Amino acid sequence: MPDLFQTILDQLVSGITAGRPDNLLIVSLGLIATFYLIYRLGGRAWAFLYFATIPFLNWSFGVIETWCFVTPVSGEPGRVAFDACLAGPMGLFEKGISFHPLAMVTGFVFVLRDFVQRRMGQRVLLVMALGVAWAFYYAWPVIAIASGLAFAISELADWAIYTFTKYRLSTRILVSSAVASPVDTTVFLFGADLAVQMQLGEPAGTMLHTANWIAFVIGKMVGALFVSRAIRKREDAGLVDPQAI
Image (cartoon, rainbow, N blue to C red; front, side, top):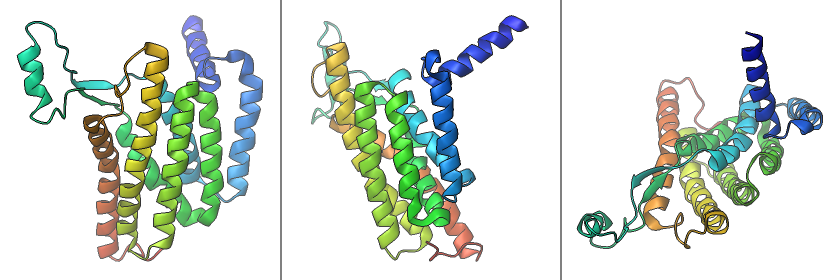
């Protein structure tokens, strides 16, 4: 039992410090200060969840492998005809299709931001900035830059659409996510493409290509669509103000 407890404790410390246990004190103090600041800004459960999700997702893209649904055309003997069939008439699947299992969670981040803004107003931008800043600590350097920029740009796009449009709440959630998801996907896959080129020696276009882009965008929109439909039902029932900011 002591060994099990020590193993769990070691894993917890490793998770908090991104595998750098020597940084435990400074990281713990930094996280405490961050959570206190968010609390003082008026953030509560949704804000804390939103903040924590950003660095977690950035970290996950560096350590959790993507799922390969369609393998790239290999040109190996015996596979040429099969691969050519997969590639399709326009070569859409020539480079395969990869999908990260947490892409749908990324879609929920945009919705989380919308919920946080309803409570905190424009102070949500500070929570967003804190999340992106911590993402640079938890993710691979190249992935961190790509994901950090992707989150920053796409979340600002999401904020602008959600803030300045006059649609009902459920529609704003869907439209803002529809704008943010393609932006986030484009910037992230561009960075991921650079990462596999630099670290694995893969050719350009391994991650950033049409089939991958479509798969990632669809995955991210699933979460937004689900929440939007749920909010629409509550609006129609008179339980939610459709014009709430």
